[in-house]
Image 1: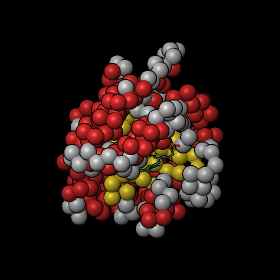
Image 2: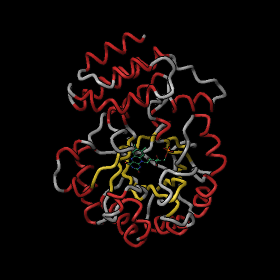
Image 3: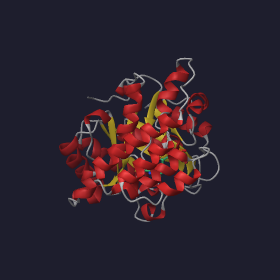
Image 4: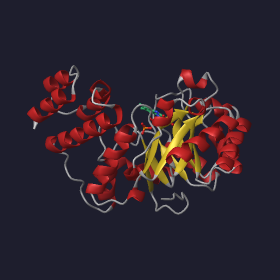
Length: 324
Ligand SMILES: Cc1cc2nc3c(=O)[nH]c(=O)nc-3n(C[C@H](O)[C@H](O)[C@H](O)COP(=O)(O)O)c2cc1C
């Protein structure tokens, strides 16, 4: 399968990269929900959680394992982070040889101290020359598209206007803009209008990111920003139906109601895929997903509390079955 950002049907709807969340199991759940709704793979692009370019080139098996992908996840874009152009290019070569993702994305938006203090993530927005060198080195290392995910700026929300041009000139194929600065972290609201200004400053496709928490908001984010598509992060956690729901809304239909039975069916599938990926003992690392799946759901408090203490897949499945 090949990915061309220019020719993908509009709007482009994509799952945003989220560390510890958008792993292979989660991407497969989204694909399963989409397929049941009759959607084709190109209607949603998966962005896999970030991996460290340094860990990849050091031969860290766990990190390289995080880039493994199942055929039904494609098209899939692997995000990497780092600040050394040669290391980023080598990481691309290694991941491509092993797993052949349809694209690579660079994290230039992560605000977390541990990342920016090593000159990674959003810190690259303060170093446009280095950022351009990373893109050029990665482009020379692969024939698949290279995209970059940025914020509006470090502290000035107009930084992205010039930074985006630098990346475009370096040859980047697509940009995602999270409508907040690094200094904002997750506070305030994402500024979709400002994201639109970035879109109009370049001629490559741009995706709008930030606060698209419900399928109903996708059209609004597209209207306000004028972007080619959206990248959805927290709105997909515990809600792999969001992409299917948008397809229904775009077709003028009402999305199907997600019953408790349906929720439990998909959680059970997710749990099975999670255990397939991480082993039968991995129920404790599945708890984070349970919190999202049951967030705001009525009458589940006591079951939810019990689920948070279980140690085995069988115990968890038995509580889920009780709830049906
Ligand atoms: C748990 C979590 C992990 C994240 N990990 C990444 C990551 O690996 N790479 C990245 O570019 N952004 C990461 N982000 C940021 C999201 O991709 C997204 O830009 C941000 O949450 C805003 O979008 P939203 O309002 O749709 O959540 C993460 C966000 C969350 C909540």
